[in-house]
Length: 266
Image: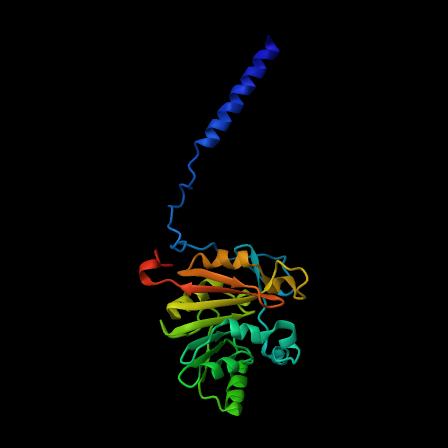
């Protein structure tokens, strides 16, 4: 009888635990429920770690390490002849659906690899704001724009927290292999979103972490899931992701209209 009583008691405890599990609220009580169109109110904190990737800066955001910025000394690598074959850059330009008269911000423009073909496509009334945090890169863009006689390229010296773009004036922001290097990704995305017109697009082009065959160091890759997770804190909605490039995905967001933006980001 003693053994039977213990078995009965254990069965009661198991049923009680299961009942408690079922009655827990589906939504966390620490954060109010939000509509699907609302950005999250506050992002996680940045953290630093002593152990980090040799090509990272030791600063982490939402579980990923931020990569080192490519210096201006490597500008020639950006213009390497084999880049079109490796990355199919022309397919990216097609996917952007560029139109004459558009204002496009090439953030992290580097040597202007994408700046100049975009400038040609949006001319004569459109322009490209070529943003970089390295004056040496912008000097190179100025020189090349003059050689190409392109008057609709405007170099912009940004900072690690602000691309210095005009508010509500940009139709498209292009980020090619650069977002993962932002020292302050949250602050940069707040500023970039502010610069977009309602309905304007922000396009992330990143080497696919999901594909082990992509010959890029891990810290310089980003998964689609990671990008979507980080953008949840901003007034942007995911439109679609394109997989037309050999190594990168094209993740496209659109700025929500004022009546669709929900809570403002802090």
